[in-house]
Length: 243
Image (tube, rainbow, N blue to C red; front, side, top):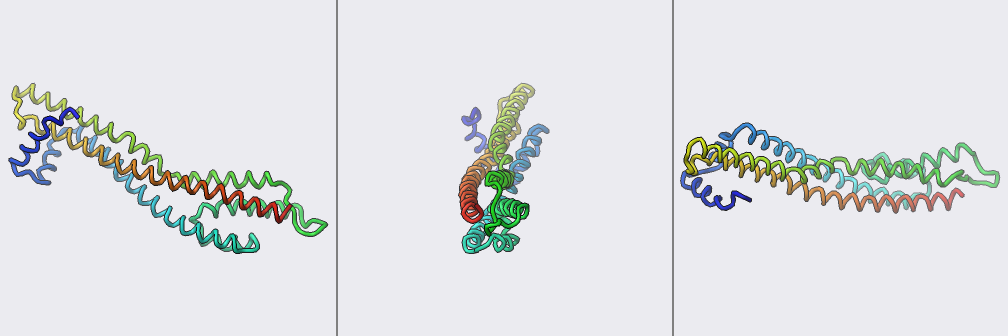
């Protein structure tokens, strides 16, 4: 960073004047409107990202519990209707949406044909069943991914927004030197503080968002594998019992 050689002088200036957290706030309040605007944008992005990460963590934690219980019910039950009766309490699992789509399609095909003359029920089209579950797969994947776009955006743009604030602060510092004709750190400290604060704010917003995005991307990848496996399992059971 261009200001890194002068950073020790900034720290010396702050320490020499007994700078505290309140002094840092005061220095920020002395910055221009552009510095405040940049900081406000970064603060909004950071708060929004943390809100998304907290909500997604709670959602995935509940979904993991519900998925484990749903699979237990699904593999233990003898009829799809028994599984359907238990889905209302396991709504957070993405597998529930897949099962309900498959169950509705199976039920619809069976009712439209009635009982087979040879006994039992038969499905008219396995392809239709697969398409129904694939549509549900897309809906569930969209639900799992909701909010991660904000994390990716925050991780990508926050450092550049902070860099813009840094450049703006340096411009102010040079303008102050030109106006006062003095290179004293006291004269340029507001511009430098604006640059440093926005740089730190940009990194503070970007780093957690990037870590959160990677964390939830892994969880979504695992959920996709579980949904793919469940579709195959449901199709196998349907083909074995209704064809």
